[in-house]
Length: 85
Image (cartoon, rainbow, N blue to C red):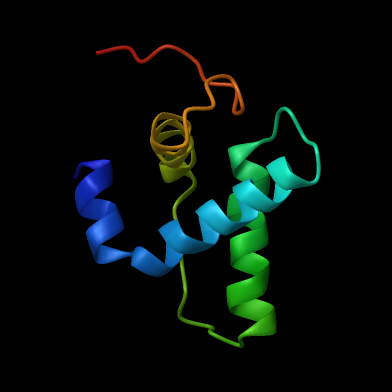
C-alpha cells in the first residue's frame, strides 16, 4: 500500500501527524522523531479519546515523515535512512 492510499484510508492519523509536527516546529524544534509523533497519536487516541480499537503500525512512521517533509518543504526535520529495494 502506498502512503497516499494509507492517508486516504486513515485521514485522522495524517491530520494528527501534521498537527503534532507543525506544533513542534512552531515551538522551535529543528528535528524530531516521527516515532515520537506516532506514540503521541497512540496516547491521544487510545487513552485520551478512549478508542481501544485504534491501531497504527510503526512501519508507517518513515513514510509519514517523508510525506510531511515534502509537503511542508522542511527537509531534514525528520531523520530518515535510505530506502533499499
